[in-house]
Image (tube, rainbow, N blue to C red; front, side):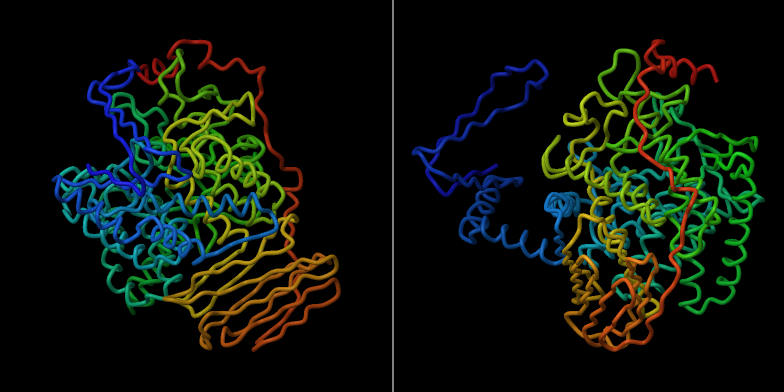
Length: 615
């Protein structure tokens, strides 16, 4: 390690271990300027030799690295710039975007570290849940493709293996790769289509299509049930904690609801790419598979009388009716065709929000469940992994929760959650990022008890994604030469400006001005795109929705007032539609901790551990 600075300074290295929790190898380095100054810039270079470390520091000084770094940060933030009337929210989005960049790395080829300080591996599941919020909304399409390609090169191609077709769950080194996840590959496949639609890289379809086919073949060989649904092991979903690496704390086999949504989406992506590469046989096959999945899913998972969705089907075909947030992914994962009918989806959202959503986040299990653990870490009654997916709040789960709420126009509830998360990013925990977890029960909302990693990739990625994909409603589909924008604006936003990445080296610039009796939308591109159709769905104060279709060949200005809509530009169509209503969701609201419940986790020492061992 080499050190240098913009001012003379002294270095003192202490070997004294003042904290008994510090290891004996820890060193404390104290840096002090020789004179009183207002700013001390330290350059630190790490390498495998003294000479190389000194060279790194010397080059940083010569190249004025501190100002170069500031310029890179500025250019990055301006690339997908967003600002609105709510300053706190705008700042939180910027910090989430910036924090997300610390996870992208090339240690074992391009990937995304899961979290700091102890998840410094690249995880398949985490990488591809994070990909839209870390890469795509920021226009980093080259990095996104490299991440997909890197994982594709590590796909299990041994047809005799039960992991055939899977990408890694975790890569700790090139010699330490494990495949124990059923959802990592479907998340990648979902990300593939998003990447193509954002970037316009249609040629990538031919490159990646064999990888997708191989995954489907692996499922057909090892996990496809007669009903068309995908089977999997108990701990192979994102709720993967195990007792001593063997017994699952939160068993979700052999068919979890979110896994079926991902399987359905994977087949849908395969069908779309099959059409693109002229694989008519494959396209017909995947269409039939998709229809069978949908039919079986509703039949097996939905209770029409109670209007609830099962969390999973076990290996003897029994439903588990535990209320978990996973069911919201059934609503948000499919891009094109919904897995559940609209009415069913409303009940899924209602059951989830009313039972699981506290103002600071969504619980991983209902507090009314016998296995609910109200606190995560540092508990004398149980190991932290007992609570990990049994009550503990996960930051990334807020992402699909907000997506589901905005899909059904529940803007006030969604934004209240987003604002609370903004407070977490800006004012609580490790500033400028989001933690992995929170305790479910909080005694002081202004001093939340965070747990897990202090900075988690998918937490900040989902926060950023929510802005672009859900509040702005940005959906590029360059595969079909169109872009859809359907804003869901909170009432606090009176002025909005946002830059939306579209294809290679192009941006859509959207300005929105909300006045008392009208709203003005101005849309332009950095480079004209005559061949791209933009579809803009805009609410009016009368409760209707205006749909404007135009080309991106020149700027578009739309003024919506109570009576009409005036569109200027190369307008193809301007029509008024009735806004869909969702009466089931009229009375949804945040839940709060029920302090009167006598949770077994707090009454019986290691009760869940003993329960799992008794099964």
